[in-house]
Amino acid sequence: MDWRTKLLNPAPQARRDYNSLNTPVYRGSTVVFKDAASVNDHWNQAENGYSYGLYGTPTALELASRIAGLEDAHFSFIVPGGQAAIALVYFAYCTTGSHALVPYSAYGPNKEMAEGLMKGLGVEVEPYDPLIGAGISALIRDNTTLIWTESPGSVTMDVQDIPAIVEAAHARGVAVALDNTYAAGVLFDAFAHKVDVSIQALTKYVGGHSDILLGSVSVRDQAGFEAMGPVYRQLGLAVSPDDCSLALRGLQTLGLRLAHLEGATLEVANWLVDQDLIAEVYHPALPGCPGHEIWKRDFTGSASVFSFMFKDTVSAAQAMVFLDALRIFQIGLSWGGVTSLAVVYPDLDRPGKDFGGRLVRLNIGLEHPADLIEDLHQAMKAAL
Ligand SMILES: *Cc1c(COP(=O)(O)O)cnc(C)c1O
Image (tube, rainbow, N blue to C red; front, side):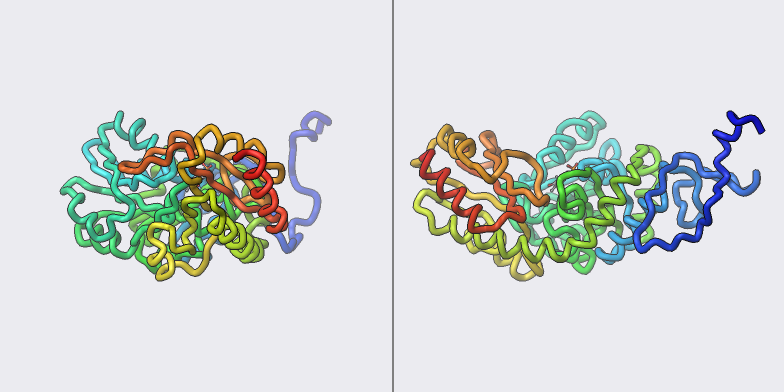
């Protein structure tokens, strides 16, 4: 063989039975079939064998099976991010003429997709009060195909009565999807509470270090699997095996991180409750949080993200100055990593409630909580 041919002929030389403790990073679009008759292009590689990298490398499928195992799901799809997971669910359950329901407190880009792509395709997505509970019955129509839930909700942290919503939905044959990112798929048992689909932004707690973007869509049963698979293929939701490898590493420390973050976050939140300038602290484990009693009933723990609101003696401009005065907290979106973050939501929009630009969301990281409290304290003194 010419050396140029040798360069391209990847016949492996090293033994392939290296039994690493960790899942290798399998990079690859093409997989090689053993003979012509074995060629297939099916997305369901678990049944049909490996066909193409788009439907999951062994690294991605290992992550998928770990997530499915943790959530007690029938199957999990790994997708490029939490928002891709939301898109997959919309497209799997809604078509022109469908009606869907989404809570006011849902992740912003979920509502954006409702008002944007979905509306354009003739899908009506109606916002509802996250605290509606069994009252959701009255909003279900003959053409309702999907009810979104997210608990606690983004930014305002409203805890939803998932069992009541599921019961009402299933009585009318409607699927319930839960954005279970806050619970990392473990602090709230989605499938024991009978939701049909549980999604996560693995970007947050599973990744855990603010350095990857990934999502998961976990389904309760074979029907969900079959509804999701073809859409997953058509949308081409490929993921990087390197990112999946980092998510697999993240899983190894998820238990420790969540345990630490719960305590540290409660320490900071409880300190805030006692401050004169603070009107409300929205943390699901504290009584001021809408739905706190439901959180106590349904969750096995709390996580690192929560919000607080300054009293109306503090202006929106002062809230911004406060943010700029923080030294340890960084100003940034997203959460679930090792760094404490703060962000103000000047235009937060909830029917019948005016937050006046005075609501701050915090993510607590792995810094010492005493230093974080001191940082909040000095920034309040400097700014307010
Ligand atoms: C961050 C987030 C998402 C989106 O995740 P990405 O990976 O950033 O696309 C979806 N839902 C919730 C509740 C989130 O916090």
